Image (tube, rainbow, N blue to C red; front, side):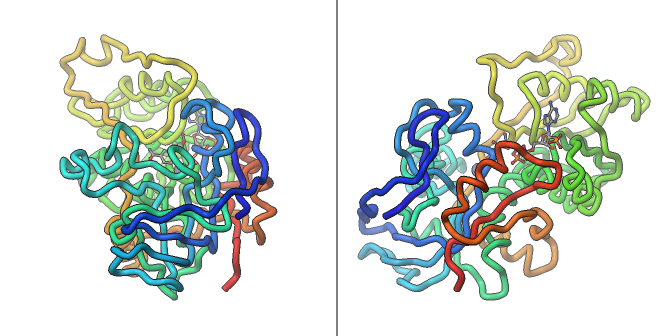
Length: 354
Ligand code: NDP
Ligand code: ZN
């Protein structure tokens, strides 16, 4: 089968591989629609997960079941499915502790394009199929459904970890697809004033549509200084980080109120350490919590997101700014994610029209 892979650090291309082998609980899926992620860029060009060779990329896909192992109960060949980016081993100790994304080791619930071949292939392997696949309903287009695999679940996790209460003021740092979903999550949880940090015009437009009250540019100087000025030095109740650098945590500590929560879903590169400013952290006593998490995955999570869309409480269509038709466009779509032009939020590649 054909796949689009990280051939070596900084090098991508198509290759051929044997189809994956199934264990009794697994499924083989062929994609209908896939989307490249900023994490694929971190993987190929920033050494985020270390050296990989000939590893098929991609972890956001909806598709059709081709084959199932003998122990799979709920899915049959021909079923249309949503495949979450995070596919935990549900029997693992960390899953039982409530952290399925870390089943099998820290961040190890993230298997596609990390510990095994990803979804940018003619076929791909899904472990624990009954617990990780969700049915793709007829009423949802594949190019929109594919936003649930990672973008919606991750962004909402940012809002979840922030424990936003009614009226809480919130800063969302970064309004790419992940930050925009965090912003929508914050609004859904009843946030008061929402400040959104980013510059791409398309992102700014969608941020306002999802409920941002004030847009701030990180290019205009310190985000913390801008927020403190806008809030008469009071700061905000919650900060969600979905973009920025290793220095962004320090800014978040500066702008969050004592007792506030900083919730990070961003991937930080560029340094092995992250600095927390001592005075702004109350010398360790300010009750300013810093949380960070990989998104949850699995079937139930996808089904909950589907229920939110069906109920009119989650909107994902505005994220999809570019749609390509055919697997041969994967390099182009990945390049868009790398260059992030002004009109881009997320590209989708339709692999099969049916
Ligand atoms: P994007 O690159 O599309 O968005 C990043 C956002 O951050 C943009 O709005 C950008 O602004 C803004 N930004 C860039 N530099 C800075 C800065 N110095 N200070 C503040 N804001 C800045 O990324 P995605 O939305 O696709 O992904 C966001 C992050 O989430 C990535 O690191 C990705 O790897 C990670 N991720 C994490 C997951 C998890 O499970 N925790 C899952 C999926 C992704 P501008 O408008 O100017 O471009
Ligand atoms: Zn991703």
